[in-house]
Length: 349
Image (cartoon, rainbow, N blue to C red; front, side, top):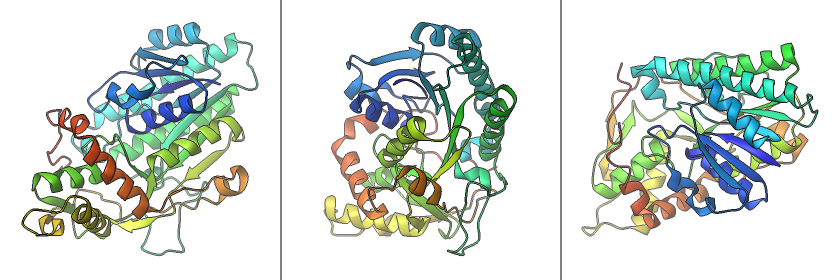
């Protein structure tokens, strides 16, 4: 397939690009190269014969039309988005512009291209979203998000993603655009921009800085290794049923506090401190962020039964692989240390 991947220089997008090229697909990587994007994320495939990079903003309809016409993709994998909840609290406007208006422009450009090509049945618009659109769950293991869970977004970020999900469904129903949708749980792994919990903990630990945990650390997330997610996304765009949504989870629920303690224990083994102290001693509890959802958990039954996908690693295995990657790729993350917001507490309201 020839895949147009938006946000392909970002964290999840770059994992999709790398995996797609390895799988033998052609990729047009469309990215505006905003603060969290990095072309080093796709350096390993940048010289592959099937790879092309196009710098463009998904809000720029003329640029999108030109890219569709030039490259004629078989499918769109739409990942480009603002994704940091804390940043959405401080500056919600950017999230509405990119996640809502950007998705609108992508849908319109894709629709115009699809109609212009004679409305081929095998074209796909794959919209990649988040489990945060479903709101918050109680601390009850029997309750999980399914594809039919009502939407209940609690932050500007999740509201913007919920709006984009609704637009995609509307374009499918109104115009017949052949879409598939996915909602994923919290991703982690290689090339994660150092503003999210896992990379912040790893890098702060190595630097001897406090390890900040919001509130009492009891907030629970389902943790999905990014390369597992990329595999699932490529499976859905090729074999998912048109008009259907699929929840993608790691089947690994863990509280933020337990996650941080697990990372600390891995670092104690991989990079022990010279003085013999433990990284866990650096844990610091900070004021919770506004509207911090208590728990997310995904029921992955649909994608497992219909498409045969399951995650390949436990959260413990994935975190160990992630720590190894950060220890082995210091040049990558050191180059990002001076970017906007890295190492700063955001989203205090």
